[in-house]
Image 1 (cartoon, helix red, strand yellow):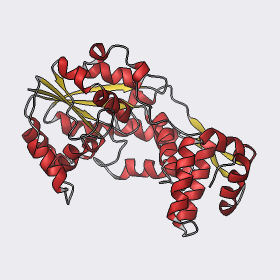
Image 2 (cartoon, one colour):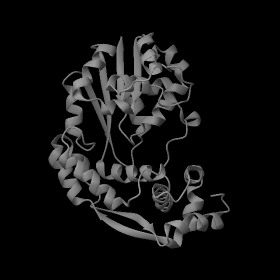
Image 3 (cartoon, helix red, strand yellow):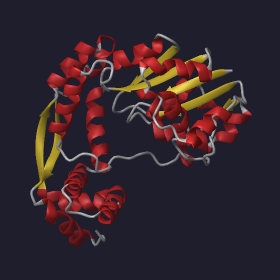
Image 4 (tube, one colour):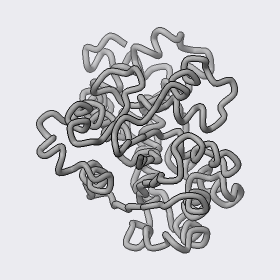
Length: 313
């Protein structure tokens, strides 16, 4: 049995590929490829999270997750497993991966240039209301992690891939901001021809939101963190941020405060710590334009947006 283990790095199309593979589960089976649903429904992403949780040694592992992994057995000549959690497997626990999947395991890892990734990552964290700071501060924190945390920082690509190469055969693919992540991953997984023209039925991707809407979401996160907004209202606004990004951005257009973020020091250190992947910063911009915030008090913004859009916030 051959296993293709896709290590889903953040913001590299992982969820979209997972949804697509699970949606076409039966088609893949007819071609001798299993994308086990692990009790999930077709078209749902993250069905392989139990594998990642157990193999990462998350404590405590839920009994349900442990039982799913224990009961799993290969049913086809090829199996595809995909989970973001595998990117956090420590060197000391990689042996667990071999114990479950065997020696004929092929690691597949997609890498994105760090400049486009840091911008996309910040927007995503803002969208989920997990960030309260502008891009400049977010970049500074990630840069500091890269410099100070060898082997653990996200942007230490060389270190993170080396731990897998010490045990398994590894394929990496790189793509830039204008690349088609989904097509690239399907090609490396060897299933693009099986799925054919999937675009019409392709699940909705994890789309970004407008930068102004992201700034609004950060303001809401600050209010919530300061105890000035209850959980129910935060959840309601979070849903509007994801579904009504354009309308919210239009309402905030005159209030945006911009910043120019210098990414040259970050790029230089990325190249220094990642000599194998230093070319990923070639041709990337030296500065990024971003919406740093909004020219209004945080407390006033939900009401202002609600009045301008008619949304119930």
